[in-house]
Amino acid sequence: MTDRAAVALPRRALAGSAAGKGVEALTLAALVLLVPRALGPADYGGFAVALAVATGIATATGIGGPALFARVLAPLDGQRRRDVARALALRIGRTRALLLGVLVAIAAGVAVLAPGDLRPLHVALVGAAAVLGTAATLLSQLSLGLERNFAWSLRYPLENGVIVVGALALHPTAGLDGALAAITLGAAAALVLGLASATPALRGARSGQTLPAAALRFARLHAAAGALTQVVHRGAAPACALAGAGAVATGHAAIAAGAALAITYAVLQTMLVALPGAARAFARAAAAARAVLRRTASWCAWGVVPLCAVVALVAEPLLAAALGEDFRGAADALRIALVAAALAPLWALANQLAVLRERPAAVLGGAAVGAATFAWVALLAVPQSPAAGAAAAMLAGVAATSAATFAALRRHP
Image 1 (tube, rainbow, N blue to C red):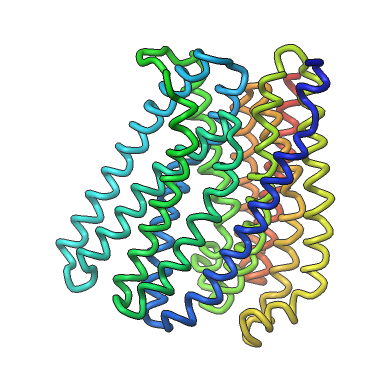
Image 2: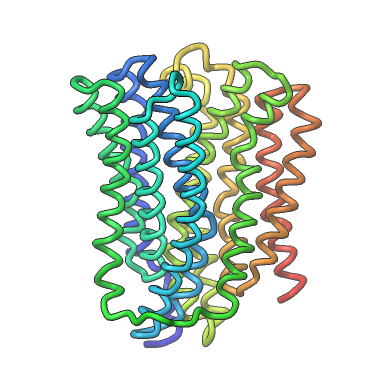
């Protein structure tokens, strides 16, 4: 196989990932539109909080994992790859299990101390969903590193779909208990998918394998960078709340940031399918490996930039039709946040080039600059124009993160 073929644009994998994101969008629409109507305002409030806690924990514990598994495993072959994959999964799994244990203990303590506010069954269901979801996230990231893209692309569509079907089926007979059980069932389904993908790939893996020396440092720096990136991506609504902007402005900021994030992470997760192949070829064809990541970013940009432009043009009627007339006021914030979403291919490319070159410090530095920029712009803009100012802070943070990461890569070619 030629070097060019080894790092050819993975069109089939990208198309599969994009299709997975399309299915995920449908399941998210059902989660947002069908479930609230079926559960009613009171039960949906409890369901939404439980879903946010369970999925938030699973997502937070997995920060930095996709880049780590893709970069470490892709260059390896055969038995060595299986051995390192097993050792890496066990090492990362132990760390995440420790963190989960602390969180579960805290939740159990709160349930005991405040029995009137939290039902033990609800705490148990959310805790189980968090544990299963964290394990499913680990296995989906492992599948990405092993280039089993089917499991990586379908992890969230499957989980969301099971949650929707489960909530609609169980709520009429079991009420909120049944709806929360659906969240646990969704996480369990995602775990089964991960096991079905990873188990055959790890068959025959030997214990006692030493991890590459730089792998754990890579993991720590990327996890820290991911945490700082969350300040930029998820800080809009908290910034409004901290500024005392009121519930309406905070809600508008949350809607704008949420829409931008849905697009941003769809782009990131689609682009990630090209990283293992590029990492595998990097040692012998560095320029070609970098080029395939740039072509992948261009491929995604051709889709996402027109999408953001169209949504921005119809922002007001779209918000009114989807959420009601009271949400037209979020249009300006949404338009600004969509510019940040349009930058997603550039942001993802900067991070993936740093991963390819094993420069986690560049990713961390860029994330630190982005978080600082977000805080500075939010401090200046949110008091004047709360929702739009928070969206502007998000845009500035994304742009600064991308620029700083590229600058760090240029300083140390």
